[in-house]
Length: 215
Image 1 (cartoon, one colour):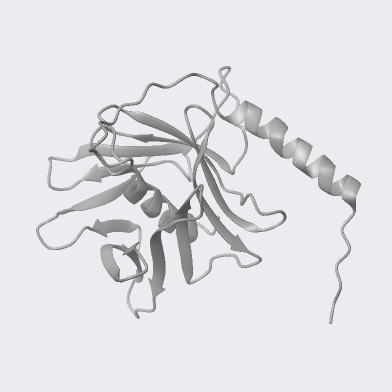
Image 2: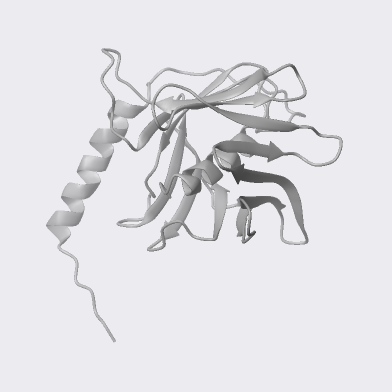
């Protein structure tokens, strides 16, 4: 049996550093509600911006935390001491599982299945396949798909709709300060276009994070 003793001062300094970092990575601008009461909380009628921090809120563990443009935590992934797990869960701030992502072992290409999650059933919602440098997202029969297109830099990319003449769905790129300075290799900006399921895009981002060994 092992007993781990943490230094309280070190923990406090780490938390203060975290708060200082978060004060820089997301803008403190107010946002107005863009959904009607009957619409999905994950779909907006306007373009939405998120700050993605490839760190877990759980101390000294792997994962991801997503903030909206008001600085509120809206999505999180907590992998604890496991990196690049074969199964991860995308949750909202309250810990409700939105998607379960499972890696499938196939001999020819990498494959990850995303399941829309509830506690009564688990329904596959999308599949991400990677063959060489091509990454494709299959949304199911009759639902079309997305293609991942690299942009400038190793970790920048766009998600485009293959059934709508390459219409832009979302864009993911390193976050910069107003003066153009990168905030590090684990802080990103995610822009999601109107009328797109933001939770689905976040789940796809999690798969890409697994592919690039960031989670």
